Length: 499
Image: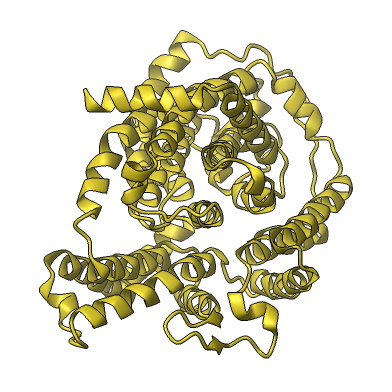
């Protein structure tokens, strides 16, 4: 009954005229971002953060959340029609979706992607409504030692699941932690690592860093490659899948939803890992005849359900523990901090309208996305023909305006430019920037909790081993380190990520 009463509160917040409008703007922008290759939810959330400065906190988070899970929907359109995934989690969808489009079955592919995503979004929202309060109550038992151990576990998990070289992922995490320490020391009040710039005494601007790494650096790389956006010539036809398509796709949708909901909660998980894992699972357990890689509709239904489920359940650790499970959630935490909200278990008790309003808005947003993606496919196809040379000036303008408006300082524009050069170098060196953002967000939190724990224990570091929850997270972290060190396990990991 408590959950139903809370959901009633949430819908009273989400269904206000203003929040419905912001939700629609969010899912529309998210779909647009997903459709246009070269952008993604991380870049779009980073660029649009400054817009939310003047909004109420609930409206800001509802719009940003809509952008995130809206991009998961929109990314499938380009993956199916053009074989260019608009978003990284749609890479798997292109394997069978584009094959279906080439054989004249683009309509059913788009339809099953929208239906699977809608179902997964609704189920994941229910999971958030029921499990987030439980996790939040548990988090109230956490002290500084437990939080520090949890953050260590989250960073190590992000390294294990990061694509590419482990050494590079570890280096990016460490660099993020160091960048998070720039500014004024909270305890002593002295400036550190500010290189003599008074503007850095408050730390490196989160807006400038995120837009530099995920906005400007991405634009520079996209300009180097010529993108072929020739939409498949075959007629799309009827978008609604047939009864046979629904029959064989239903098990894949159910499995993808369950797998994505679980993986979305894990640190380093989210939509990307969920979609790849779902595709590999379907290849192993789907009933014959199997035609994966050559236009099997289950290869679209499973990953699309999984990536949307993972996108939404990744909100659970963010809003209950204040721990980002992926880069987009790190940006959401940054948005909460800008709004003066401390992410963590107290959000539910101190701001129940914000918490339950965000959850209720996910149902509203998923319904809006179903309407946007099925009848408006023709509009998205026309948008695919927009040349990138017309898009990138607008992206750069958004970044510059956003960096300046965050603090009304020209210095932040110069800082963003310098960090963009660094971000471009990361791309060229094949260093994934996501671990850096996670380290940047968690670094100050880890320092603060480490100091608190040491003050409570009067300098006795054994406090991290004598608290059961803290010890559990440290053991889990050690187990993940074993995964990194043991050669056989490391080889298996690399093969799995390569596949």
